[in-house]
Image (cartoon, rainbow, N blue to C red; front, side, top):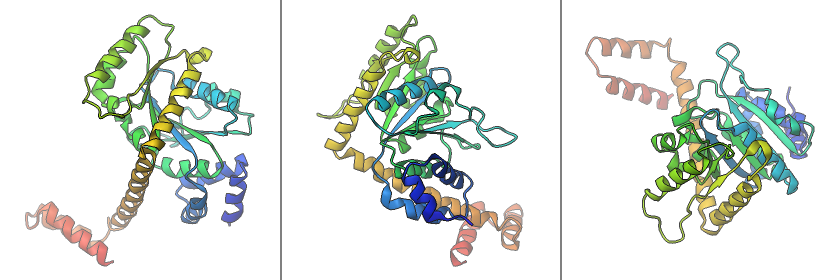
Amino acid sequence: MIDVPTLVEQARQGRPRAVARLISLVENAAPELREVMAALAPHTGHAYTVGLTGSPGVGKSTSTSALVSAYRRLGKRVGVLAVDPSSPFSGGALLGDRVRMQDHATDPEVFIRSMATRGHLGGLSWAAPQALRVLDAAGCDVILVETVGVGQSEVEIAAQADTSVVLLAPGMGDGIQAAKAGILEIGDLFVVNKADRDGADATARELNHMLGLGEARDAGAWRPPIVKTVAARGEGVDEVVEALEKHRAWLEEHGELEVRRRRRAAQEIEAIALAALRSRIGDLHGDRQLAALAEKVVAGELDPYGAADRLVAGLTRG
């Protein structure tokens, strides 16, 4: 039997074992999850969430580690949610050891958790919103969400972060990829990492040009800055933090932070409701009602939409 109130209180005190246990309950969709979320709710809403996305190989893990160091120098408690590809055998995170973040492993003010996508598209785990709530309630000032690195489907990070950072690297065709993937629209800050390589200036110029081709911005609208870094050496990382703080201030000044968080909450509610509905439909797979409807569709007596309407009506009555 899990003592949820005690576990939540220990997590609020920043105890790593309690935080890890709560996130495991989230990932496993444990029966206690509803009680956990209800207990955490009054203690959330304080953390600043930063999403880092980009193509594989641009240095997301290295950049995340460098940002952790920068925020720790500012005295911030930092949470890291690193979403990795799933093993097709165990369902676990393939890169769960996070070797490049081991510098922070012994820091009690840093909590790092790898989560598996478990087949979920969009670069994020389905459990990410609830895991973010756990880290928020645990007193993290900043939460860095590093996505799986799956390219064009990574735009989902914009729905989970207060600020979205798009990382690119010279010589990888990332400028064209950014336009193709639609991440120009979701980026609040663009970072050209590995800026010590040839082509870094050209990548930044190309990116700046593409941003200029976008729709005309209203007066006072946020113009995403472009910062060049060499994350492996910590170069340019303080400038990234400065740009992040400027964007946070802009969000608060224009009321956009509240708008984004409400939108995030609405999407989270919708996702939970849809998951519950899918679960109820799944229970009907061996049900005579679903089998009878499928038979009518195959026989041409009923179209799929009409069958779905009857199924939904049966679910709502139930």
